[in-house]
Length: 532
Image 1 (spheres, one colour):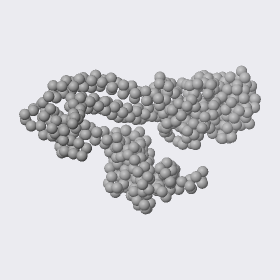
Image 2: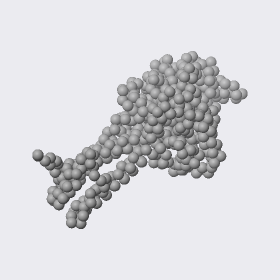
Image 3: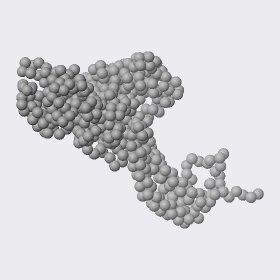
């Protein structure tokens, strides 16, 4: 009977080495790509958010200075609107405030008293623009909504300040217009957007979703209210934020926005997501380029060593021949005695290699599951818990925790202290909650607690315990940092994870809007649908 001789040791080892090298390259490349992608996305959001916050702050300051300048000039001129040098004073003011295309005074009846440029206007003319009507109606310092000037047909905004006579009676207003289709405040202030070379750009949108500034001048005046980030601005959400969206050209963008509070407008900076992926891919190619020669050299060396060492290892064939699917022998590697030093050293090296790779794998697994700052579970791990519980039909509660005024902590004490506050909250949650509660850092200053309990009251008690502790305990800043908490229960409030997060987030927003430092219970998904 012909005996099956099987694979030669030399060929098997060489194949295993090659497979190990390929697997190592693939695993390292995939892990590096995912980590770099997340890091670049986070960095892109941060750069864009810093940019829009700075521009919003600068624009607010400019609008404030505009209204202040108009108010001061108005007080000086309001004492005598019939003065002979009124036209000269308006020209002088307009020349010293280059953002305005024209400055003018309108009386309380809406008639033009005088203007810095009378080429297309006349004194006593009835002013019927939307900006004039808004200023006369509100009788306060304001930045108008964008409107089309009935005379020039240009899209403009008007900045104005009320005028009062010596008795304090309202007699009209002094104002200035900014033509949005010409060189204006936004083109001057916006400057260059971070990473502009990769397709990043910024635009300004009014509270009604109308583009006030855009790199493409043809789009100025276009209504873009269906854009999700513009919808947030139009809904009156204050502050700033970031999200991923698809723009009008069907390009996925990483966008950040901030509000120009003085005017109720928003400024948006966005970067193509593809540019982030390209950067991550370039990193992977660089890793492979540097690793490949070393790994190929490694394969060649191992092949030569195996060729030299294969003869002494023939003595191990008796042990290998006893292995089969029904007889796997011992779990331990076979003992190689002193008569073959090379085989013994290879045996020990292989053992060390196995332990080393196992340690590396465990380390990567730990990093992939936890938040590096707080040591809590990250969002990916949280999703696994929720998916598993919902699939298994296990009831649980979801608590969404958000630090109140955390931005002021970073602004006042710096990001290092802000990080300490986050770690303080993470430590407090571990102390206050049960071992079976799942604590996750969702992102920024927002944390998630999953309470695996059929009773919703257990989660509410835990939420109140957390809120009370933070409200009464001094943190790293030396003061209290309070929490707003939204609470929901599965399946009592929602039938799936998406609904559960939505109703819990809505409860959190109610807690924020009703004064913060409180726990709000979510409405059931069907109740939310009915109210909408």
